[in-house]
Image 1: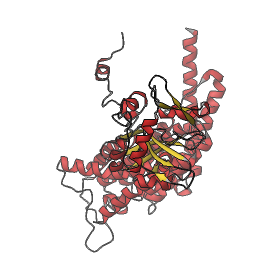
Image 2: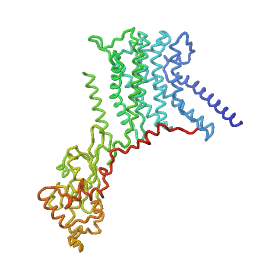
Image 3: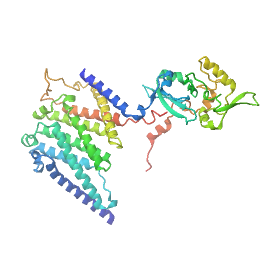
Image 4: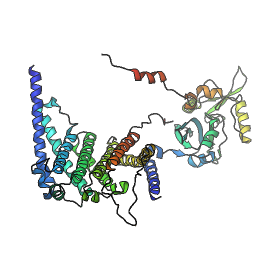
Length: 302
Length: 223
């Protein structure tokens, strides 16, 4: 009975420690993000400003996703277990903050957080940051798993995946033929969901391409890039195939406006959710092909 | 149209990068026909025996052949080469045979398939002729020092005779392959089939244990 009670106490202690880390996360966020985003420390009123609530909740969810695979090993004592957790979680918080800063700078470079979330209460904007938060979290979770405890490997993988995902984010306008700036300005919530689906799809493709053992960084990067290129080849086949099978009349791309370099998005266009779901379905199917086809002895050596 | 071109470019990029970074594929020598053998393997003396062959892949097959390179007293080397279907099919009937020979003197090369060891039989550096009292035939006996190359001929209980070599030399002069006095060598040769441990002979068309495969669907853990 004593042992059971003791175990429960230890678990409550660890829970409190995690809450302490989340508390410190709030302040670290303030340090990492620039002054215009210092509202991280301000109170949240979900009913008055839903976009602010979504924004902060998505960050917390992202942080929880990152830590969800962490294991506590008490064989070396509680202190060592908490120390390990502290070290990794602080590293991950910093990398998470930096990832968000980079991705949001790439995707939302035209907008300021204070304007969109505080003044305009733009749910479309916070939906996009929600998508980016979850994407960053899943990528970090994956690379934390691959790094196998090495902070150097973790840092290398973070750099690599940040570059990959950063490039991927820039393809939104090309692939979906939608103008992200216009979506945010028009507060088109449906199309902002398409961006969530888009970023999650890329997350799936990138994380599935990282299932390679790290023997050397060069080899790892090369094979990951090969996998991503393969994903780019397979993805349109699935996407077009699904569209044809289910007679989805909206093509993958919408034509540009006549003699214009910008894409026009209709304000009442509600196909964003459909786009997001199709993108996610396609990404799942693509990752099945890129990482789950095992040839085994199909090509035996002579 | 532009998208289609970009898609094609991505496919070629994928193929190019994959090709460049798979080291095992990169180092496989490609030999399109029998005349290319001479330019790939340049050392002399040299005898090449075709020891195995296989075709891998589903739609776009890769045709592989395994050559055993015997160069004088050096340790024989096995080399896997890839080729095209035409040369692979042509070579199939010569499995286990010497498909290429180059003499040290004059650097003369021959690609007429001959029984394994043809290059060494009759050369006093590797053995000598001895009359078999039972059969009254001259038989070739290899020196013990040549033992490391003999085992690669996969003769089993077969002993090369003077008559065989004589006929082989006539065939060589006429530029015709020679499979042995009683067709002992090659794809249908009983000696080759019995003693050459080639995948082409042992490979079964389907080795899947279907019973085991389907029974796993009904596996359950005990309560």
